[in-house]
Image (cartoon, rainbow, N blue to C red; front, side):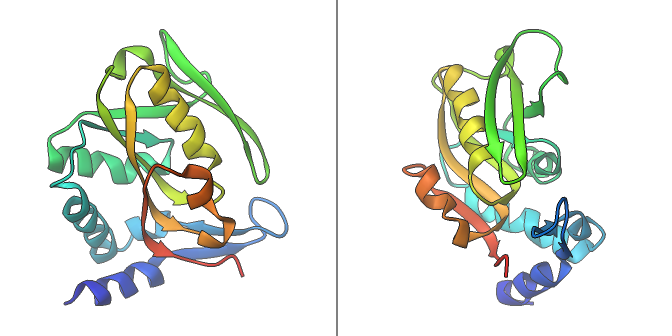
Length: 180
């Protein structure tokens, strides 16, 4: 089966939920990828193809769905995985960053001990919409003296112009969708 065929399987595996978490928002549910083994396997294999030859020292994954895709990739690449969690979920000293969502505000944190100064990080989330979560995640990495080499999302909604907000850091997605 070709990459194009698997991309079609992946796109079809993504559940679309209208009016969630509030009216007017179309929610793209990647958890349905996890119940479709060929789609999940394709996702991880494509990620490994994309990043196996790039200079990435570690992966930072955004809670919680980003963890599901980042963990198998970190294992395949043999590099560390840093968890970016919601405020109050990590013990010890943390870096903190707040941001606005299209439907609210949030604060995220990462362990200070987990971010290595001078290292290059790939930040992974399940979906890239406005770029707010990833901008805050980048802030966490930079607070630790490291740099963000690239952002990755399984799904991207390009009409929300996340590339402009996240520039100059490159952004890669496997599937681009529309809110319409």
